Length: 379
Image (cartoon, rainbow, N blue to C red):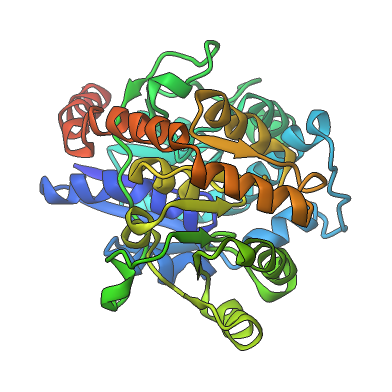
């Protein structure tokens, strides 16, 4: 069986699909992952064969429309959800011609797309093969899908469609306790870390004598976008007498190390998180799932309003506190961190979520259903 995986053009979206891709490879199937050119080191670094389908990176699609005009990025939820869907759809439309060319010689039996990987349903419709949509985080992407459908009207008309094709199978990784009641039916799969690894030092996977707080803005953090955010958090948390560790891409880590003197760099979060008492983060999907998987409380400061609802579901469960960027003053951040570190109920609820995730079916258990789905498509 040949399976084509299509992530969303950022490291986190790649990491989310890697465990299932590796499970299928481990079962003897041929797997290929198609993404943007700048994601090829990330894809291949996880051990999955990869091919680039567009030379543009994610920021090209966020900031420019199809004609190359600059976009205004909305900051309110009613407009931001559809806006996100539109630029993900633009990325999908841009890569579709290359995908069609690739699949003339390497025809997949199945296409697996991540949430908002809109090239996946379009390609599957062109090829007449099954399409699987696998969530890469806990977000509800209904508003994004609506924006994508508006953006993709030319591609849908070419297929004789007015709407995006429904997946033949949905795979969700959100633990049931956090699943919104309006979520469509899906097969549940246990989330596992799929992030890049690096040679470790003992302190990364062992606990010290002091409480440890992880502060991160995820794998897309850059000096231009997130240095001030991370520096402010480190400075706000410093009075709590905790060890602060900042996983960050190397370019950003160099600046943080020089100015703040903290342990920083590409520290695999799945290794570090279980040693932490608290993770302070931006609400990115991979960071959120890694923290939940490790059973660690969160302080979540969503970098975009579309991340707010899933973050608040974790807070409503009792495993996190959420502050908007406007609320994240030095005093509020220090107060929230102190509360999360001193109140044992947050740790108890975080461990409940971790145990719930551990009961969900492993990616290897998805291989059989996907084989049957592909066989029906061939039949």
